[in-house]
Amino acid sequence: MTHSNEVPAYAAEPNATSAVPAQQTEQAAPEAHAGNEEQGGGTTLTEYTMISVFRRETLNELVLSGRDAIKAVDELDGIVAELAENGVKVRGFYDVSGFRHDGELMVWLHGEVPESLQWGLRQIRRSELIAPLTPSWQIVGVHRAAEFSARHMPAYMLGKEPRQWVTVYPFVRSYEWYLLPEDERRQMLAEHGRAGSSYTSTLTNTVASFGISDYEWLLALEDDNLLNLVDMMRDLRQTDARRHVREEVPFYTGRFVQTSEIVEVLQ
Figure 1 (cartoon, rainbow, N blue to C red):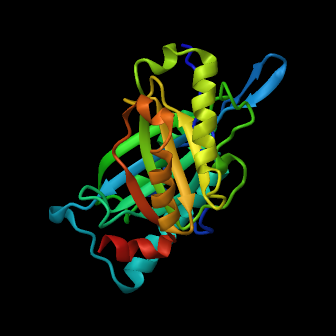
Figure 2 (figure 1 turned 90 degrees about the vertical axis):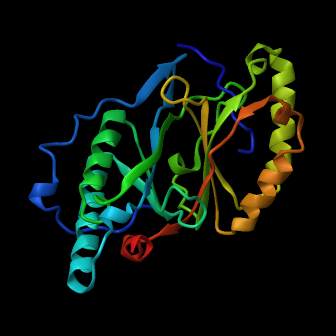
């Protein structure tokens, strides 16, 4: 399947050493496969990303205190460590409570092997902290070389440390967009890029989601200052590319939290 790979031109894992209890672990992580593809004599790195949002259930509330809370956090830290050993990186856990009615915690995974991300998410969901939660929104995307910016890569693939805040949302272009002349699309994306270029502290993560979700693109914007995300999103509305937006909801915005903070978020 081929698609035009335009992206908006503008547009660290928690420390963990604890062992994972045997009853929480599947038999083995999926066997890793090569995540690189040869294209035109060069190598283009391909990496998947998975965003999962969870909500609390009033009939199945998490109740932990004292040593039980410490044990649950240690268990999750151990799972994060095991995932890293098997090629699944946890970009972060995020407190989305209060910003949406349908979520308290967001989990961001990435890695080269999609089935490993599925396995990794199952491991996290079996943990004592996450098991009582219900998934409310999930999406997967994959980095593909952009048509008009071949060097574009998501921040998480460039070794950039996660920021304090992230806003995640899907994106669908208009039906006409992919039928427009290439030069016209290039010009609109260049204008779009200039509109966001002044936000130098914002990290952009744009990945393709054609055929693997209900959307075309998945975007995650990161910044230590939440107001920068608000202002940048507003400024980007004032470009011609905005005329070719068909869908860009839901938005999930959250604060980066350590695993030790998750107990407070969920209780």
